[in-house]
Image (tube, rainbow over all chains, first blue to last red; front, side):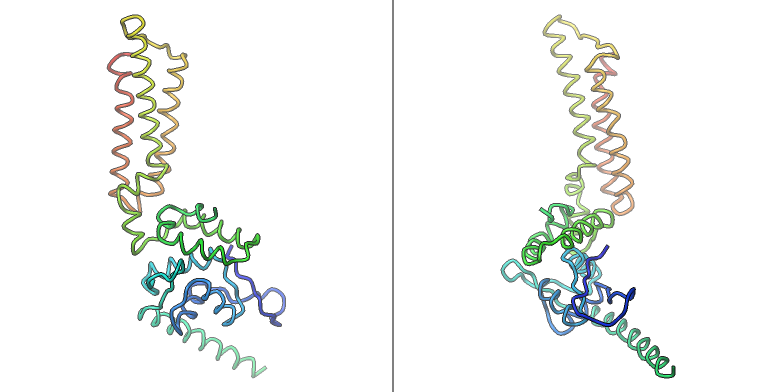
Amino acid sequence: MRSTRNVVETDDGPGLGHYSDPPLLVLGSLANGPKHGHAMIEDIVRLCGTRLGPGTLYGAIARLEQQGWIAPLPPEDRRRPYRITAEGLRVLRARLTIMHHFAKAGLGRLEHL
Amino acid sequence: MLTRLYPPAWRDRYGEEFKTMLEMSPGDLGTVADSVWSALREHVIPTRGGKMAQETNSFGAMMRRPSAYLPVAMSLAALTMVLGAVAVGLARGGHVARDPDEGSIAHLFQLLMTVQWPITLFFVVKWLKSAPRQTMGVLGLQAAAWLVGCAPVYFLHL
């Protein structure tokens, strides 16, 4: 049970839901600079309309840090920003490239309908 | 309060920033359910890495887990109870009073010494794979405490 709520109105239709891969969303959010948890949540909402719950977000942060794909920065007040590492960038690029190829191929097939 | 649902090692590492995060969240039922589920997941599949690895894998951190210290505490409680009964017997009659099996002290002793087995089993199942050396250390301590707890009963023929 991940708390991911779609806050942007889309015409996906019933049953399709919204994109939810918290670690990938966190990596994507950190791709344009370090952010703390709350900033990541708001950025991910802007990116794809998915609002991650705090538990889901920190579950993803902990596992990404464990894998060495993100790293903590010194805390600011009581909030701690995170940055994406070089390995994290490599993983994100590889995942997005696969998704890009899939999306391109899928949309290409739809055009032929 | 939601932060307290997480394991101590996780709280040490992420507790403060997570609490700040919760304060900025709407605090609705979805947030609560999400945090409870994530905390449960963290207990079943704990995150390790960075500072948390040292915390989780140290013997001291292991001993702070209820399933590690409870069996030891139960053995020590049983030992204290038996030694107390022996001391009272000596003070009253000048000899060690033998408590029959159906006596309340005997029942409590048997309860304390057997209820800890499933707790120990849970501890072994949960930690042996991820931290074998520390688990064996804790297990050794639990076994020693159990033997020490049984020693007066064996040697004094109670």
